[in-house]
Image (cartoon, rainbow, N blue to C red; front, side):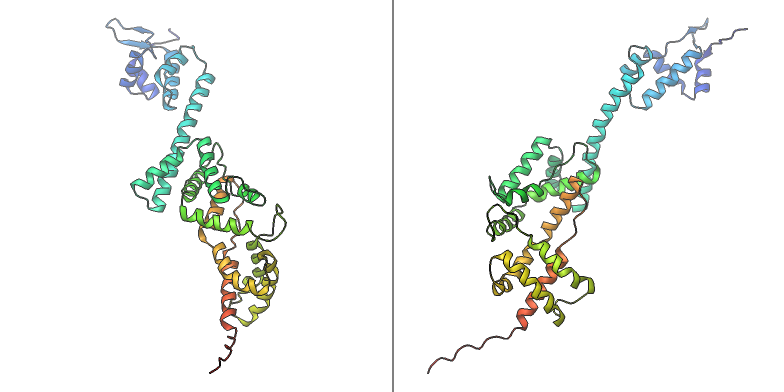
Length: 319
């Protein structure tokens, strides 16, 4: 009795669940040569051919091309070599697909047109060096070519660094952030804030207390209790706020009362907060807490106080 029977192509198909036409194709391509033939010329396959067929199917389902499959089953390449090469190729494909998905998701969310989606696609394809050039150009436009302290330190904290293998959220954040850096109005807004910071009081090169952080620390207790900005009880908060902010503005309390509302509204620009949130996502930092509620509350409270102040009568003129 033959311990190693041969199987027809139909029997091999039934045993392995592989269509006859697929087995015939692999056989014609040299991946599955028949063990023998019947007197009438039909192909016959042994048990080793069935195992070889299982390997060929597995490699093809993993996306490995026919030449690599042939070299593997012929033992010209080892399985680890083939697996490593195709894993690397898949990594590149996955990265490309991740970029495409980020572009499409961003376009869908923002409702962009044809020109905008082309711009997003170009941003997504930038190399590491090209991304750095884009960021450097943006920071130079905001802070100048050679910013001194404390502007150089601020510029570093505003620098996005997309990792080599970003996740989908980081890619989407990078696309939106990169588009924001190209907005001339946003650049002008940040340039004005940088100018205010550079011209503030204090020794040159010494970092100063952040105005937004000072306002948030002072106003947060009022926000926690739900105190309205036009409430008479807000006066105590405003008194402390003016005392703490006046030195940062380089003037007295009267000047602080006049300048703070407009200054705080500029700091509360939603684009600035959006940039900081996107920056944190790109760099993998914890999400920043929003200073906008404190800034808008303080600006409203200051304007309410100014409306409530009595108007000094004009001196009488002679007849």
